Length: 196
Image 1 (cartoon, rainbow, N blue to C red):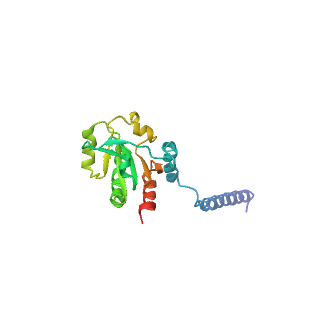
Image 2 (image 1 turned 120 degrees about the vertical axis):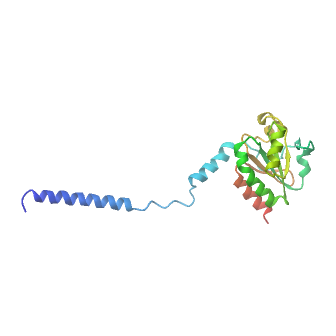
Image 3 (image 1 turned 60 degrees about the vertical axis):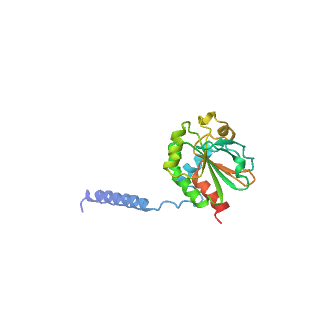
């Protein structure tokens, strides 16, 4: 071996060692995720309630009374449903998120409607668009509306509705069980109270 080949061997050995270290480091497994840590999707979902439902009426609060009209002009009062659990679904036919949730609300109504009263409170201002959407999508539960702009309605102010869709579950005594903007939470609560 000549004098030049010894440093070259050392350089090659050093490069091989560095490459081995890099390969081993890249093969290390990512640390296991703590099961208690929420996923990004779960955090985003949680943030919806944290952002939009934080001002909603709290558990145990007396549900504010209201009387509103159906598409046919019949007056319906919240007190008409006393003795049953009631889902209040605040929505509007022009609201993209409400439209997205409508099939799932319908599925919940089909599943629990014999035990729980569903009342859709619409913030539509045009009766024709409101009733057309209800009929076209087979939303067969009770629907009422003040037919006025959302933020200007007494019912939206009384129920602290800052986002739609917003949903409340009310117990048979007329007390708030909880309020949410997340349909999956409503589904869980309905399973707890009516799924037996």
